[in-house]
Length: 287
Image (cartoon, rainbow, N blue to C red):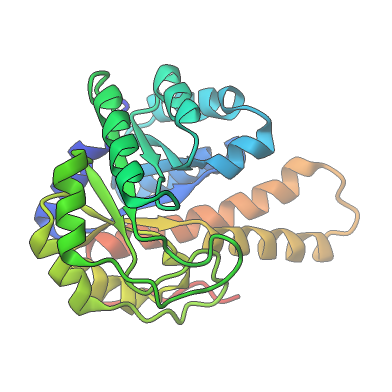
């Protein structure tokens, strides 16, 4: 199955009102586990590498090249996506490396500069067959502060998409980054209003803080791309911790890393199946 661009699978999910799972990769093993999960679910998947993950590795190329290799060997459609890049040079690096999608995050910039810079990124990316996601209205939690009060105005969203030509739009509707509990309350009426005004798939950041039922309702209201990071990090860390407590003699890092990967893969399979057919709800992972 070839590596695919984001807009092709996101548009299909938008039409059928299903969710497209997008999962953040920190280590190469994560990408392998996520693709295994997508293969089991028979669903497309987005493998995301964030600007923070790039900083962790010291450069984009090592982790990016590895994830691209995993994607190209997959039996299901896989998008390799740069997540939350505030640095235009990093966006260009991802495009040059072979990523099929990028997110340019200019949400901290003044509106006029955000639109102009985003438009320039779109023109550069589209000329190379790469999809572009952008964010309007800063979703809470990026600096460790959960701010569910941020909201995206539907009229402003429509104007931003028209002015920039982005393929997907991340919106603020009540979620918050880095939540370790799943009690966020989404504004479903606002999701519906934005979806009615904007002719591109919508993206929900901070989905780790949203319950299964909340995600079902958000997808039904018009949300398409569902970003998940902290929820899986919590599952991975908890599983590794439990494994090491139960197996104190183990020194082979592959064994405890595999325990974390297996737990994440099981949850990604469950989430992908849930996003595709959101009723009845499967039992969530208990932590």
